[in-house]
Length: 108
Image (cartoon, rainbow, N blue to C red; front, side, top):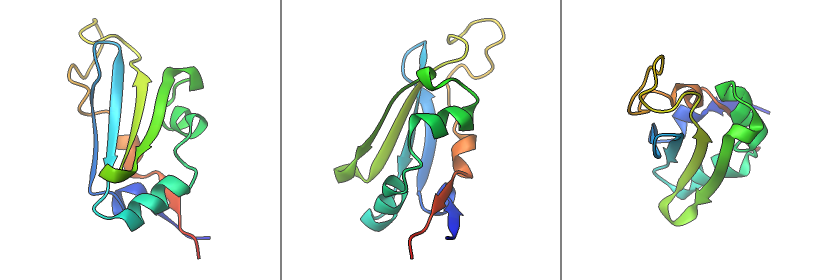
């Protein structure tokens, strides 16, 4: 089975703060076919997201699809609270990079 990186299916992949203790990731698609391929791949689960971001599964607080918006949303606890000494991305806007290369299997 062949796979493609998520970035080849999604038109927007971004991260942002969801308060001082959480980050949220938005993955948006231009059409329903690409959305369905990504969501139905089974790759959006706590185990995969935890491995991708190097956190425990309990750090992933939610994963859900928004079919009408052709989007997938993942929320996780920040490793360091926003603004704490050593925290490197105050706005949380540079944390989405691991999602870009997430392999999404293509069905035949």
